[in-house]
Image 1 (cartoon, helix red, strand yellow):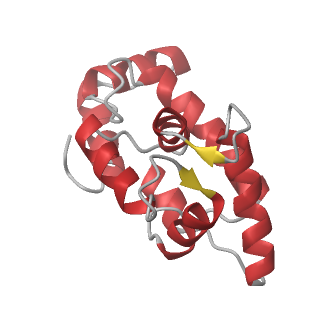
Image 2 (cartoon, rainbow, N blue to C red):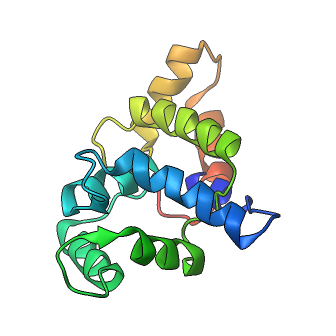
Length: 151
């Protein structure tokens, strides 16, 4: 679901428009106003956008983006990474807002915080939504939603 939303959005505008948009995202996650993103801020950014990385993965990704090896990510490094990355294709503030609202709702049901909705968690969604579905119907629905087949 999250990856589908990311893959199906793109910017249809200038590089300046993209730079301005990415700057607004950068500023949102620069919590201490240091004009750089530190590892904890980067973790928050990734989590907010629906990416649940292990500590090792975050360290690796962070070090790739931090091309000057300063221990922080400055805007130019962040912009180059964002522009070239296949992971982040939301370049419209309205779509990002919608995505974040959907992600917030997703996290309410991702009880173990692993970035996936298990069958038990999906049953809770159905119960909370007042769906009148059998377990087999829920499993069929889950199968349709689980596009990568990882459960």
